[in-house]
Amino acid sequence: MSSKTANKDAAIDINAVLTPDPPIDVKTDEDSIKKELVELLSNIKKGDTLTPATWKTLKSLGWKDTTEKVEKLVETETAVKAKPEAKAKKAKATKTPVVRTKIGRMETLGKVLASGTYKEEDVITKADALYVKNDGKTNITLFTSLYSDARSLLRGLNILEEKNGKVSIRK
Image (tube, rainbow, N blue to C red; front, side, top):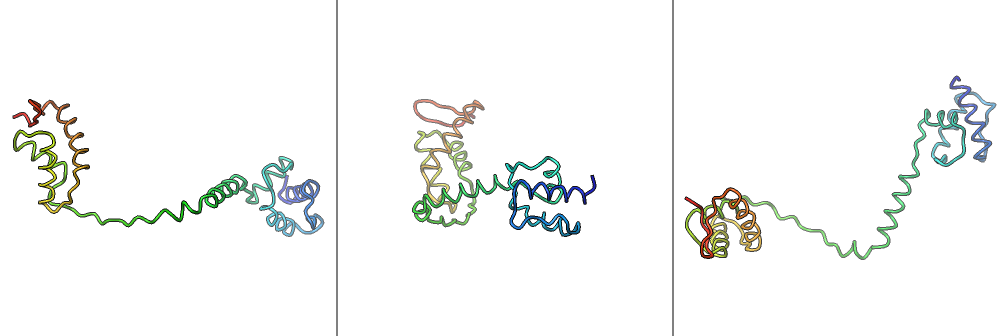
């Protein structure tokens, strides 16, 4: 089937099924029929009961199913409209610039553990103090978390000595 016939057949099918107003003029030249078909593409939906040949022609002219995109957009807009106060309450977080210190938090934990035998809480406070001394910011909560990870790793490597509530690195 030539594109001339395909476009004309598609126009006849669309006129019969979708009844556009005004209908596509099927007695005009091929370029005019094609132009009218292209103009109607955005009005044609996936569920329209057109023939397979018409669908093939429409797809060759650039028709794409936009119903899913439109439905998702409507859902998103509805969700946003339903919670405007939540969006307003959410203040933009200001990004704190990353400041490189002379020594990292995990490294300070290693240095403290390597320097002697301490209670676990002393390891954390000494590491935090060493980090602050090297231009870092104090954060005991973060050091507690990091120490837990470091302790697990050192236990796994079997190099953490734990005696009488104190810890050190095996020598």
